[in-house]
Amino acid sequence: QVQLVESGGGRVQPGGSLRLTCAASGLTFSSTVMSWHRQAPGNEREFVAAILNGNTNYAGSVRGRFTISRDNGKNTVYLQMNNLKPEDTAVYYCRVDIGSTVWGQGTQVTVSS
Image (tube, rainbow, N blue to C red; front, side, top):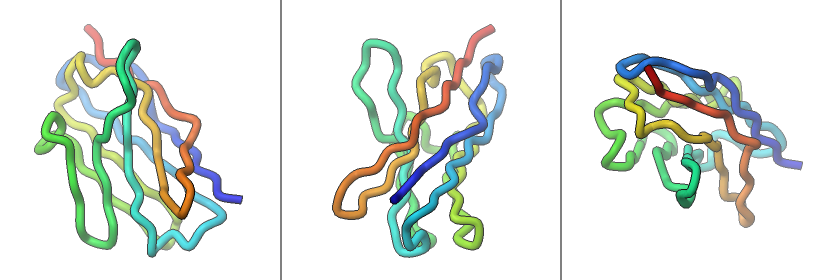
């Protein structure tokens, strides 16, 4: 059974940083695309970033501020978020597609002064 567990969310002031972690189990981690998505209140869930091997892709709204990385030895994917803005406030989800789509439970990020 595939499981994704996110952690690292919290409340920060604008301009601050957070690092999110997604721990995966039950899959061949190194050969899968891992991605982060987010959902703000009243909005649809949206793509943030994805990674496979050394290739990364970012939403335009976060490019240059967020960095996705992975540690295949730890079955973990990270999202380093710098220069956070109030509009980054959302629940952040980890996702993997392995025939079916699996989501983590999400972690809340709040950017507010």
